[in-house]
Length: 147
Image 1 (cartoon, rainbow, N blue to C red):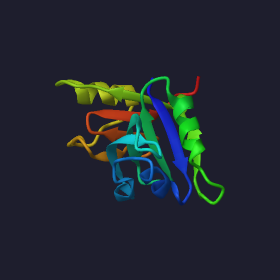
Image 2 (image 1 turned 120 degrees about the vertical axis):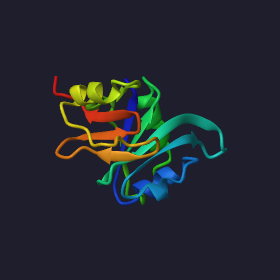
Image 3 (image 1 turned 45 degrees about the vertical axis):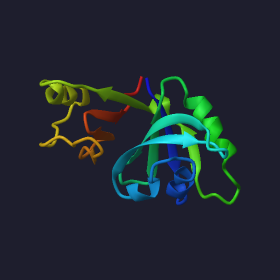
């Protein structure tokens, strides 16, 4: 499964914007952006999909198995005055990406929910009413079912 990091707190956009090549500040309210994560020297550390679902949390989706490593990277850049918390949340979400003519019905079955029409285009994000799921263009991110 993809790595998922959660950024909360009033400084979450500013903090993540400072370490990403995408304009994370422009995502306020609802949006998704593809971004490189860079260190203080400008070296690329990873590629992320940054999701603002319009709530009080930003999610960053990264390569599978790198959640702990990414969490440690971001944690190194936190200062005591930063009003932001970073948490490794990979076990809390499931990510689906489906393509093809039957993508909509397969995704609706997997999420157990009717999907809006039309589906979001690439770069768009929509939260499904009454659920902890977001549609991201051709895919979806949903809260994981309890084990």
